[in-house]
Length: 303
Length: 323
Image (cartoon, rainbow over all chains, first blue to last red; front, side, top):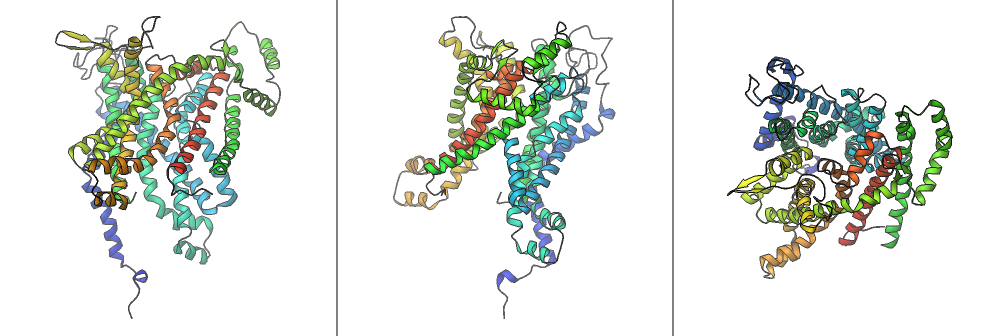
């Protein structure tokens, strides 16, 4: 007698082939590959910043600087200097460090909080779900940029902006952008918990937490990866916007955003100082967005 | 339908109260709280601060203060703005026309361009038009708004465009050059901020229109329309677009509050005398009532437009059941 189709079990190597399909689909998305390549270059630059940099990012070129920004290629400054006579290329390289680390740490925080709350909400339902979802509604209803501006202004008010450091920015952004992840994970868990393997895991007497993390979560990873990738791009924009408006990373620490704040005033005499930092943001964010798009297509053609 | 709307309205009241409590607690626990602007004044002694605290009722328990705030808000009083020396409502109403003008023009440009580009790329998917539009949309979504604004100022205002011995330049700040504020004057001042504010929405809405349109093209009723011998243009615009726009209406409604909140950056860079800049200026001086009022207002808009999006979707798409 033949087994009905639904009951046939695929051999292990067929599963491996399916996973292989993910890579194959991703490889076909050439822009996503290009995005990944650009991102890797940026990460390498950020990691090895002290080795690559042509100068100290905070050092003022006392010899050549006379109160005005130096133009590109003057006195060995490949991209020129800013209005304080600091090497622009060096600041861009160290700015990559700040932008990428803020984004990565904030997204890790966002994913951890969002996944945890979404999983609890979707798995337990009832009052737990209700409480978590109302919290999610509240955070989602207050537009993020104005809220971040007010919170950073509060932190800044007590200390004349000195305490607006890397950690504060990461915690504020990461601590407020988890709701979309929570909703995503909750939606996955609502359907996953009804599946047979979840019931089997329950029937075997597994503890709730073990079911959530060992059995259900691995099946909900694909959309989380895509959301995390795209959110790295969002956070880079958010951090640079805050820094540009004066409520993010504070000078003298170089960030792509605060470099632009300084460049705005001198745009008529030193347009290069306004062009390059923004170009770095655009290229990085574009690369990540293409990468995220490719991952979405590759991980789940239905998404 | 009426009961559905009523139920959704009632559901949102506790949400708004919860938002206001969260914002109130956060802002009150800020260093200095509502008295922060006075703390920076060297002529005000600690004894004065104590007296002010008592006069403003800030020494009472937080829930009593919140209740007082809520009662006032419900009668349309958002408090006194220390950075503008007038009531918050008056300060906001003063800036409202400028914000509405910028929002309105950005909305118009975004909806026309976004939907048109979306249709163009959906009509011939994977053609060069489609690739161009999709690429531009990706750029638009990845563009840091403030940098785009700076580059436009650099190109069109700082240097201007010189061609054929004729210099063309656009104003980069404010709403008018003179006090008369003529129509042409207002128009040229509106161009750059509108382009900057609408970029992200043109990008998102065109992608959304494209995918929605592609979904509709595959449906049976489109094949039926073709089988009846209708002209391709009629099929596309009358049968296709009408149905494809239903989800677009939702996404447009959901982005409306973002158009207000996102204007903070645009208004700041272009010195646009609107509500976003009012908010930005209040940040540095920690103008408690204004910050609280502004955050509450845009949160209210988010909740309101979420509701409108749901209602519009249910109303436009008869297949959606609401019980």
